[in-house]
Structure formats: C-alpha cells, structure tokens
Image 1 (cartoon, rainbow, N blue to C red):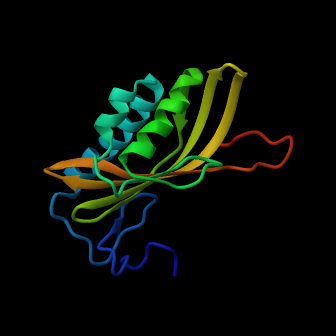
Image 2: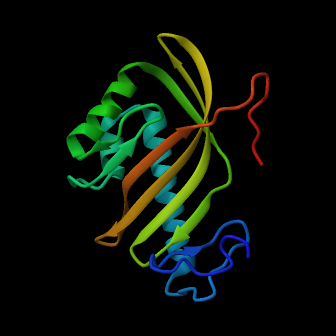
Image 3: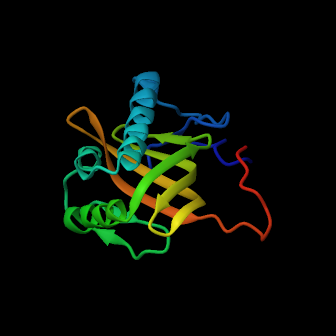
Length: 167
C-alpha cells in the first residue's frame, strides 16, 4: 500500500497532491479550501521575500501556541519568540527569493498541512547564499481564514558536488 492510499485516520486529513486520494474524502468545499490554503502558503512566502515583519505578522495566528523551527534553530513557541526570530532574519538579509517545488497538501476540516521544497537564494552581509530546505507549513482555519500555526524548515543535505533538483 502506498502512502495516501488509505485515509489519514485520526487526523481528519485528506491527501490531495501527487495523485493521492483518501477513500473517505470530505468533499465539503475541497476545491475552494485547496486554493485558499495554497493562497495562504503563497502569502507566507511573499511575506518572507518582502522582509517586512508587518506582512509576516498577518499570515500567522496571533496565539501563544504557534511554533516555528528554522533550519538549525531550536523550537520557538509563542507569538513573541516567533516574531522576534523573523525580525532577526530580516535584519541580516538584503534580498530573499524562493523557488518552490510541488506542494503536498493535506486538508482537514479546519487544519491543513503543506509540505514543500524551498529553493532559497538570499543576499546578506555574507554575500549570496543558495540553500535547499524542506518545509512543513501548518494552517488553521480561524474565522474563515487560513492562518499559519507552524513552520518547520529542515535543511536538505546534498552530497558534495551535487546540484539542487526540482522534481
């Protein structure tokens, strides 16, 4: 059995990407939800590229339970520590651009998970750096709007001499 052939029991999630379907899929407003979640995910990366803390604040749920894990950082919990981390990142970068790989999207009634490969180029005090990160972004529907509650970025450790690949 391939991952995604069976419903994600206990989570109320349906796998939408890569040809996966849940046998007990909810069709409540799946197409609308899918687009709204992808729009929320894009808004996160637009805020990231803008280097503006005000834009980043608008995509996150303002709650003490939010979590952010930047590559190589410890887990940050709560509005203050998470927003402070973004301020620190934005202070040390002049420009940031993302090329995103295909997204795997898991949708529940009021919770959604987006898994995506980030190909990131940043210009900062140390010059130009290109990196690959695997990101898990979790959104919760609050008041009819999808808000980020978790971002977890893990660096991709490629063998020496290999080029980043989008599939």
